[in-house]
Amino acid sequence: MMPRGDEDRRALRELFEHPEQWEKTRANIDVLAYTDLNLKHDFKDDELRCWFLKMKEGKLKLAMEVGTLKSWGTTGEKTFTAERKNWEHLQSLGADLYAIALDEPLCCGRDSLRMPDEYALARNG
Image 1 (cartoon, one colour):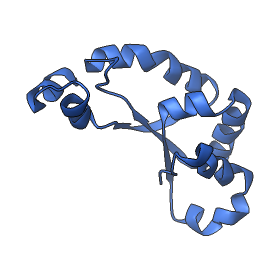
Image 2: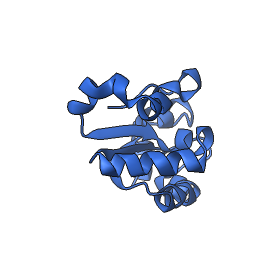
Image 3: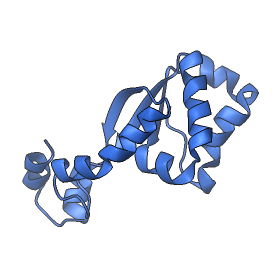
Image 4: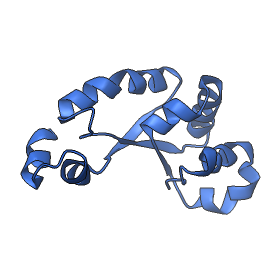
């Protein structure tokens, strides 16, 4: 499950602050996904530390959507290098990464970088 990231990231916060409101949903999921940059920018370390602990206690796995090609990271390697400190920081707070989803490298290659599809395929490794 990947909660919506709009409305001041309210959906993710409510999952942890009001767990009684999502008991049925929680019974049917085992992976919670969210974007790495939103975790970094929109939540305090104390909140994340608490939530990551609750996830472990509830056997809820964490998947993160991460950048691959961006206007500021024109290759997978550059983007990884730029975002690595954030991932390590999240792990230091208790994040146990189960899976990683790539944030639309083909679309970014086409739209932001104005490159052919082959560019995204070749630079995303």
